[in-house]
Length: 260
Image (tube, rainbow, N blue to C red; front, side, top):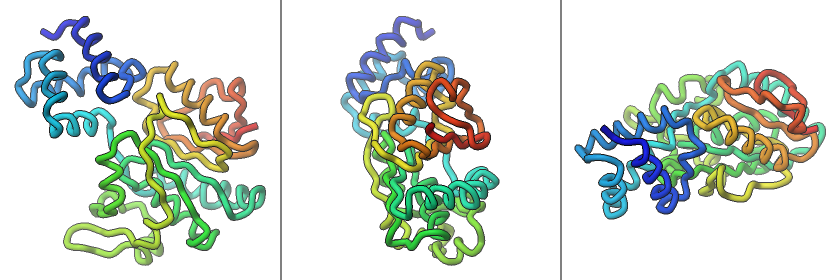
């Protein structure tokens, strides 16, 4: 039986090793994921596991990759992307022009920032699009830079964009270099690092559901500060900002919030 005090020790040691603050994640969910990993390697308890990932880079990478929960796909929740395409992007262009500063936060394997480039390409010439995409997991950033995806990942991409920007390579699909070139990937920890400023659009979807309410609120407040006035935050379909008015947002629709 793994004792509670062991987990408290584990959180402190992991923070020293990775700067990932496990206190900000829902404990039950996170412990379940970590316990599964420990059992997989037949390691006895958190103490031994910390020692193991300290000396074994393979275990270390596996741990970071596993707990940062990388589930992603292109155009996830297609109706929301339709609203982005038909309402949000044209309004942003009208207010701010075509040189938009866009941040895809917790971007995982690149599906989201590449979807953004394709959506924007209907309104703005490709060479004018620049997206900053960040994640704390360097493994998924490396995967994003390769740009190879399975059929399920790209299932929701509109057919015209799929034909234009994907090439089949064996069972996989490779995204065009013309899309990849528009995205700048960086490592970034939402709970620790300084945020971008003067953004016109921030997209952060299906990540904060794993955070505690306090950590979520802290991130939403920081996003508000990162946006220009009338800039927009696009969140996931399982998320909502309960205190959006107090935080300085107007709600445009269920998943789109505008900085006052």
